[in-house]
Image (cartoon, rainbow, N blue to C red; front, side, top):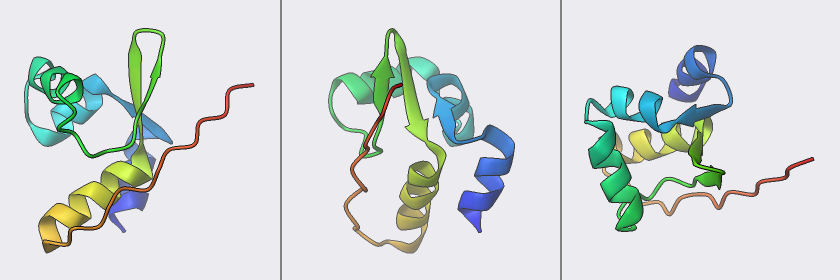
Length: 80
């Protein structure tokens, strides 16, 4: 359900600005978590841009809300 709602709003991937807005934190705080390896959401860096698969963000949020400690699904990025 959450995955569907987020996918409709953000599409298949979210960038750092969208993710920071969703989590209601500053974008700089999100970058700090990325650089320190504290963000357990699969992501890919394309040039200077970080992209997060929307279904993985939904899974991460669901795990936080339900208290489940499920490891994130690995990201497989294919660039044509």
